Length: 276
Image (cartoon, rainbow, N blue to C red):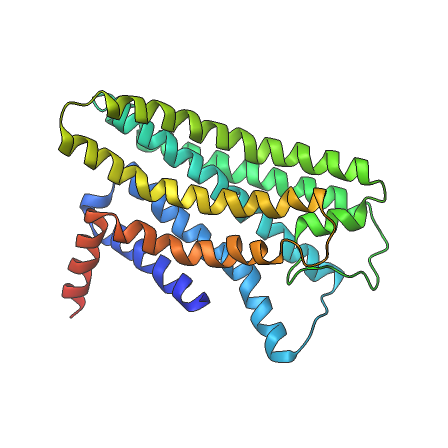
């Protein structure tokens, strides 16, 4: 699964970079999403593979924080990139004549940079909370990696304070971007329904369908893990969902985008014929 994730996302990166017709904001964000997915999955899966081979279930305090920090950065960047991609589709479909002016290279470069800075801030915020807890010796984490939600359960002796922290961070980094996505799609659907041409409607829906599928897959599993752990303290509850969003979702993203996107499929065919 890890090899499929890396190879699939690398193919998208190569297809976008090698085809000048795909040098547009939508594919710029898609290539960034593919790069983030590779890093996101590598943060978790490489350590997990080593643990399986060595039959080890131990991680040091420093290694745990080292794994958690990039995990949060890449997870948040996934989150914000999906929001930016929804905004890109909104501008393209609802304001097609102004699209080249609004989505300039300067703007989408800034959007990616802001996504990274906000994700870095979230990572440091989690680190500050967890670094206040100094007694991690022989602590048990009910997961296969240093999941931030599990570490917060260890740091906060007060369950009420723990839940406040989780829901606040979850609302800011989850509900706000998701609200932006929902608002963008509300405007997109309203604009599509006003179209007279059936081919235009199909094209608009096809460009949004892949993104919408990835959004549902990512947010459904992420919210299930992060907020679900605040409600239930069952040791094995949420472990299956924990496998989904850092492992399964990055693996499925290339298939979802390539199978439903004619431009990307033609670019992959052209790249394959050139290689052959």
